[in-house]
Length: 230
Image (cartoon, rainbow, N blue to C red; front, side, top):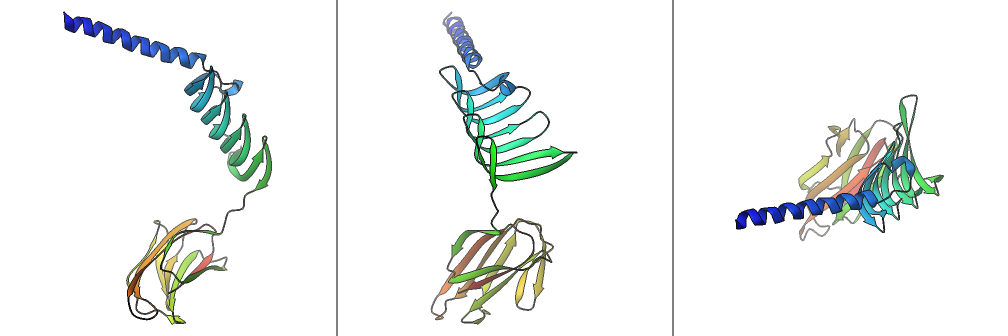
């Protein structure tokens, strides 16, 4: 008898929970008609607020404030166009990427927006640095526009460092290993390319063995030379 009683109580509690949840979602409004058909996510004072997903003829997934996209989010139009970036009070505002589709081809525009108006492009850096350890100095320069390759030279005391051991030069699955004289690297590289270089070498005074590490992502196609000095 007790088992039946508790089963009934549990069933009613579950039904009440889902009823309240459904009612809350039904009362939570999105103030842009094109995405106001269904909504799942945070709610405050009857309006979409916090992380959520709204659908209609278009779809938006991201942050809301007072019923409007506000913060980071992705809006996809019914014709396939898309914007991923920052929003403010329902309008594109801040850094973001807009992908347009014309004649079946995509074109992307990355930059800064304000009140749904594109202000300026955000130029991508030729390369971005990651973790660097025990490197006295380095240079990363684009030698030419072709071929698409990344080469490496390691220097110490003004000459080629020939005391390197446990050497690794790893790429993110792109390119073919290539060597030219004292330089080693990869050719036929697809950019952007993530590089991780590590090795051990005596320090300049030949007193201790140091572990060297460099991580860099090269974004722009071309013939690149990385020079590391210890």
